[in-house]
Length: 75
Image: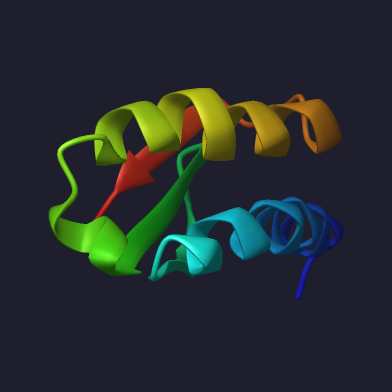
């Protein structure tokens, strides 16, 4: 696992408890062309707020730790 992937995992582990508290979770699928690919699972997968969760929560947390990441895309 690369240094960037490790930092992304650290960021995901920081937001994971909030997702799990709502009955969901997040899976890291990889990095492609500077974008982190993730999958929301559980209650988060069908939640109408999932786009906001990805942009305001997950992406912000990742970009704070790994500024070279362009963004987060759902898979």
